[in-house]
Amino acid sequence: MTNEHGDAGKVDNLDPVTLTIEEWERAVAKFPTWPTDPFHALGVLGEECGELTKAVVQFTYEPHKGVTLADIREEAVQTAAMALRWIGSIDRYNFTRGPQHYQPMPAKAASEVEHG
Image (cartoon, helix red, strand yellow):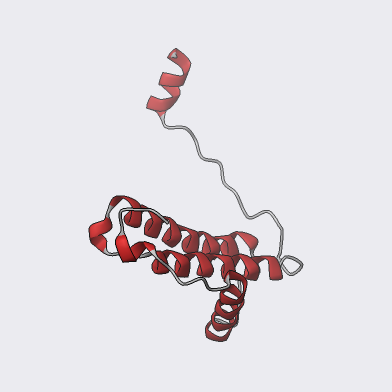
């Protein structure tokens, strides 16, 4: 791979499937319960995806922060493991609409919409 990161841009060629399953096992051992609400479960997955995004941004645009490809792979594996947890519970989720409330538009915004 050609990049500007030197050794930080190199990773060992480890099997991503094995790494993901091992991470899934660690996550379940550490946090054996999982949300029954699919949106809360997506929040867990989204949090991991956010950490992956942050690592990629820092590696690419903020190399002084010291993020390596190994760090990025670790975040990607954690994201994949949470995706497997999400999929693994798909038949246990409570897919019901949550309570909702009416939210009026603020007067200033309504005025701007009316007057274009």
